[in-house]
Length: 91
Length: 364
Ligand code: SF4
Image (spheres, rainbow over the protein chains, first blue to last red):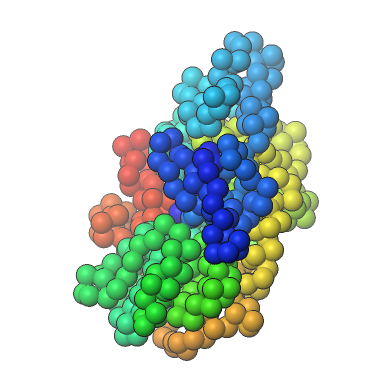
């Protein structure tokens, strides 16, 4: 139950007279509502991590590539092949 | 931009495994604190692919598993005797109490509902003004902001028939308790990425420095876990003990200040009972006096005697990494996910259930 899933913000709606910002977030096809209370800066098209109906963090694309960069580093040390093709690509 | 599939690539996982093999020179024990990481390790067969010198120890990181028996009894009491609409996350329903689980209470007619988010519980309260609604609010620091937010929403919207039965557990005090336990010998930790999303990494620096252990904040995909393991091993091999962040795509050093603010608005730190482990100082959240009207424990003043744990269940030793699920005499015999004796068999993030589901993959 502690897991959170990254999804993309499709739209944002203000409810309860401006008190609540809710987003429609798409997780590979499935769309769910998430509160943006913890992410006041989040905007449409941002990737956010959602946990029990609340968006808790924006996903940083540059950092997302580092897991693969780390492999590349290892590659240089241990003669592994190029990992460019595995890097996350923009849609 | 895709964020899942690459992190599950088996070819890349092999490269990490290869590098781990090349790096490790002597035996090390590493605890993954979070049940989500246990699940990932077991499900993807990573445990058995790691070199023999690397032993993964499964930590207390499943809030469902460590929720005290007494609180489950209280939740069942509220649902059955007080007739409230009792809501919680799905996992909680099957956890055995001393008499019955919430699922059994539901089967007997109590109004027990599974929700995806605590915010839905506030809506249920608004829609049912003549009923009382209680949300059984369990979770680590990851879940605390959502649970706190439900209280803030109810307060703002003037909802009077909503309250939470809070049972939150905090990770850094648990890591400290595990290190302090003489029986557990752990060389390094994978800290739970999603907890740090909220709280940041700052709490880990004093821990890592005081106990001279590497702590690597780690994600949950197979590549995340493998990279985290490699980062811990590299530190150990170089006699380093630092806090590193493998999961920087999600976790910032300072965490999420807006989430911390909501937690602090509603909760204060208190000593907390952990099922199977006992009381850990300053390891839980209680609802602040200011929101006492939303605190089910105060609202209903439920006093229920502490009941003894099932004596056959060794879940405490499992969660501290002293024993593996296979070493429990009940594992897979009287204790199965369909009939769990202890909480680690209930949730798919519990160590016993993770081993049970994938027991074909993991050797004793
Ligand atoms: S297998 Fe069942 S009885 Fe044994 S420790 Fe795990 S939960 Fe408890």
